Image (cartoon, rainbow, N blue to C red):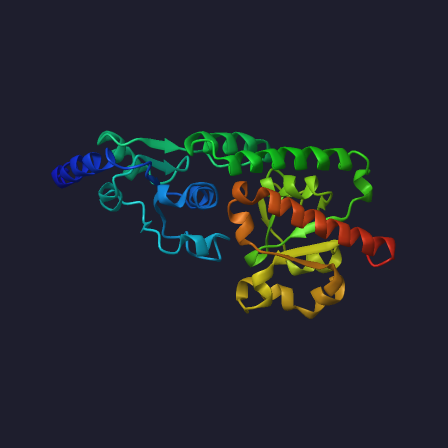
Length: 286
């Protein structure tokens, strides 16, 4: 069995170091990374994950430059003398369990799976970060934006809303029961894939035979070819939908919805308004 004595020695050293320092936060979860990068004081961030500086996965990748990055390993975290180690609900279980045994404070923060979870997540993160004003304002904006959209949606019958399909790599689309589905509905759409539970595979024939009013794809698909996005270049799809009915959204916003929920909702509302205008002038057929 592997000895823990070197780790215990490191633990004692790190606890001594932390007694003379301000809050030191270590994240072992990409979505927690984003919350820290957006709302925590930079001097309080001791480490983020090695995903944090990947622009395909985080819109805050540039902010992660120069910060220590970890792979969720105890050996990487103890020398940092963290005051708090922040994890998701399920990841890095072995490392966080050992850190807890060694006396470190570990906080697991469940990530939102529904829009109804967003507020509790923001409140929890605000508590852990010392109630930063920027995060409190962000939460208030979310609550107001959500209420305004619910009020606006109540004035429009479901049948009058454009049908939207969020199509990810490998033809994967969010269906019923997903946060993305709820976000589309809140933005004023009907989800084209609502009859499918969870994340479903959509084939080309379905898209051509029953095209959505708007196809929402990753903006990266415009700049680089990949087999995962190959269907977007198919002539039959282009003929069925047309360029006016294709909208682009940076996929890195949706990897972790909570830190980006206001930007996501605003972008989808803008797309919805554009498609609704097309319908008014006869550019969209249902």
